[in-house]
Image (cartoon, rainbow, N blue to C red; front, top):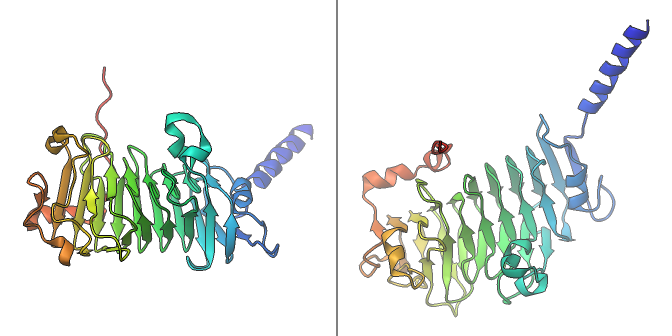
Amino acid sequence: MRYFFGLFLLFFFSFVSAQYATEMLVALDGSGDYQSIQAAIDASKSFPDQHITIHVKAGVYEEKVKIHSWNTNLSLRGESPETTIIRWGDHFDKIKRGRNSTFHTATVLVQANNVQLEGLTIENTAGPVGQAIALAVEADQVTVVNCRLLGHQDTLYAAGANARQHYEQCYIEGTTDFIFGPATALFSNCTIHSKSNSYITAASTPPGRAFGFVFLHCQLTAAPQVKEVHLGRPWRSHAKTAFLYCEMGAHILPQGWDNWSRPANEQTAYYAEYSNTGPGAQTAQRVAWAHQLKRRQARQYQPNAVLAPFTLPPMPH
C-alpha cells in the first residue's frame, strides 16, 4: 500500500510541476497578472516545452528588461509600437563598469534563444551622450517584428557569434554605429533612420560566416540636417554587410563605405550592394573595395539562406 501511495505522490507532483502559464498579461494599472514586464518574465517557466506569450498592455514601462538564457520559447507582445513603450536611460559614463560598460547599458537584453518581440517601442533615453544601447540581442533564432528601436549611438547590438536574428518591419534610428555586432542578422522591410552625419552599421562578423548584416527592401532615411552618412564601417576586420533592393536617401555618401582608418580592413571586410534605388544608391563613386553584386550572386541572399543553420568548423584535436 505504501508503495502505491508513493507512486501516486510521484505522479501527482510530476503532473503539478508540468503545469505552467502559457499566457500572461502585463498592465501598469493592475488589471493584468503583473505590473512590470520583468516580473512576468521572472515568473515564466524555464526552458518550457510550450510557447509562452507575455501580452503587454499599452503604457510607458520605465524599466530595464532582461530575458534570461533560460526564458526560451517566449514572446513579448505589445499592443502597438506607438502605445507600448519600454524605456530606460543607461549609458557608458553612467554605468562606469570599465571599458566594456557599453554592454551593460541595454534597455532590453535578450539572452534566450527562440524569442519573439512584437509591437513594442524599445528606447534608450540617455540622449547623445555616447554609447547607449536600446536593444541587445545575444541569442539565436530571435525575431523582432513591428518594433521601434530608438536611441543615438549603438541603438541595436545584434550579438552572438553563432546567432541568427530577423528584424522585420521595424523602425531603427540612431547616430553612430547604431546597428552593430557579430550576429547574422536579416533586416527586411525596415526603416533605418540616421540622426547625424556618421555611420549606420558596424558589423563584427566572425571569420568564415557566409553572411553578416543583410538589408532587404529597407528604406534609408535621415533627419533634415543630415547630409553625410556611410553605410557602414568594420568594427572587426571580417565585417560583412549587404544592402539589396533598398531605397537610399541623398544622405548616403557617394563612397558608401569606410575602412575605420585601417586600410588592411579593405582586404578582409565584405561590403555588397545590389539593385538599390534612390539618390544615395548611385555606385559610380563607391569605394573600389566594395562589391556590386551580379544577379547570380544576389540570389544567394534569400531569407531562408541568410537564416539557415550554420555549419560549425570541426573542433581542433
